[in-house]
Length: 240
Image (cartoon, rainbow, N blue to C red; front, side, top):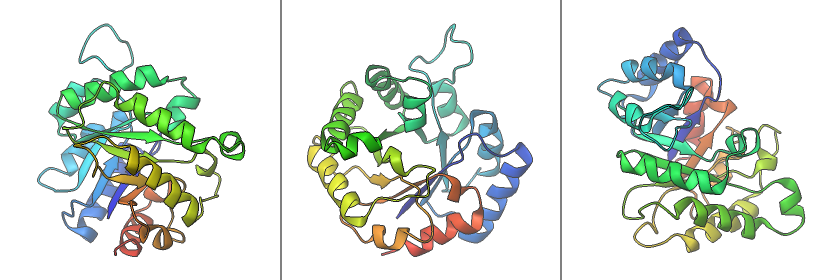
């Protein structure tokens, strides 16, 4: 069961190094774990994970490998530093920074082009769910995000209902099952078996019931990934 920890804009270099050392001491080199640190901590995490099967990646990148793009992160540099993954279209990138489906399609393509695995995030707001638009929204985001990519290359999907991120709420098992089944059915060949993670406030007290569902292949974890004990406990409780 995959456990990907999105640190968002948290931790200092010293805290990041201590976290990775503790994680490695507790889980060894399990390939089930992926760390997604802020860009400024990438070199620290990469150094601490040398020789480990624990993965790491970027929270965001631009769709060009280099150029006059002040403040952006190059997917090519992430790859050269040893990253294996990059988030594309996290709800905070969409809502706070105004990233469009068209931009995210370019980012997805760019991430794949340098040999990284994109983790495409899709999810509906509370208003969209309450008006019965969940399927429409997540399918539009999925299809747009994949539109320039290559399904023959690795990619992951993360379903993150926006109304359940940072709110303490979590989708019910039935809601998660429905959304993940919709996404699985819509995936193109040959990417039909791409991992689909649940990313709506996954915590130790709710992952066990969700991990048993069909088409839930792991979790994209926010706040609960900031402490090693919680991060590891989620993985332990999600084992089938």
